[in-house]
Amino acid sequence: MNANVLRRFITIAFVATLVMMTAYYFYDAVVDRPRGDYEAEKGDMHLSSGEFDKALSWFNAALRRDPEHLGALMGRSAVFISRGEHAEAMAELDLIIDRLHRQLDEAPEDSLARQALAVAYANRGNVHDREARYEQALEDYVMSLRIDSNIVDGPGLVDKIVHDPRPSTVRKRAKYIYEQLKLPPGERVMRIPELDAKQRMYKP
Image (cartoon, rainbow, N blue to C red; front, side):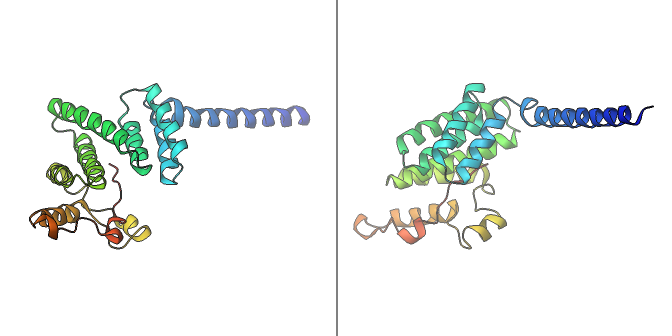
């Protein structure tokens, strides 16, 4: 076989293999996934870096592909909380909580749905807390702990190292609110800015 022909054959084969591998990885990463997963993942990346407008755009894109996409709904609620848009966050969390209760009625063994429900209650409690609706906040915090105390009892080791060595957990905040509500109104101290600043949203 002519050497030039052989080289061209090898080059063509290499390029074809490269194209096929790229197409395979693209298909696996984008096409062969549940609808909306790719967009929700991109939204989560922007949410984590504080790019809330971009995050919301990706979450909306995910919901256009799958209006029931739980990750995108949770992501949107997190964006609204981060931007202080509490009414929008409450509407989203109410929707999520209602849907997850129905899902668990049909499949009580669904551990992921149970974890997501605990997170949704914790985050809704956080919104009530920020709006000074402390009784409602306490109810949601307690419900979150009843559903799955492990998922909302504080971030994992990596989060503790990266963010804060003594994070404010749902359990701690619920206990604090409970103790303050037992006091006469004039003696209650519901907000401690340096501690409140340590509260963060949870994700399943």
